[in-house]
Length: 200
Image 1 (tube, helix red, strand yellow):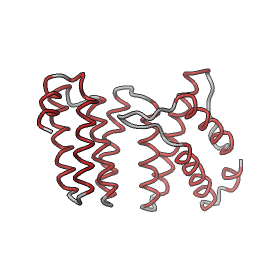
Image 2: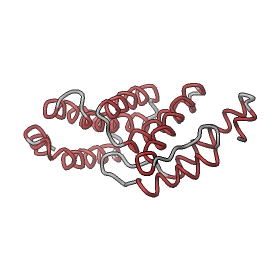
Image 3: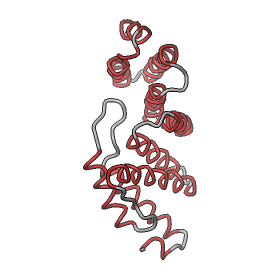
Image 4: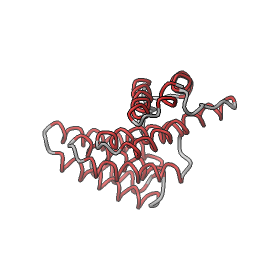
């Protein structure tokens, strides 16, 4: 742990290696029920990352993402949303991997949906679709058409198949997550009496 911090402070290139060490340490703490220590270790990593590469960087966004995930694990939804939003902002400002941004947007949307904040959930789900469409657009000038859930599902699957990765930093959204998101959107439109939008 101390060695990982030392390496990170003096060599930002080793960020991913240090991150993996902190992931392992945090995982051990979580498995033993010591979640507070896991959170503290990621807070240490956050401070070390800021010292190493600056406050508003992609790497800081990644650590904030880790903090958000831990708060989800322990049911602190408000804190999780806060950290996810900060992570998303960092990723967008640094023009990070579009799949990573889509992953975060889906997670924020699903948390809002769990809290019955349907309008906010839809906002973040649409943002996720937008970023997935940009992935395709960058590839072959294609786009996802809002409102057509079948086309969105098919093209999201294509975006994941051709551009997805199991990154150690933030993995791409799974096809199941995208399917759930689109189904949730259809259900929300239906509940809102937007029948045409639900079946278009």
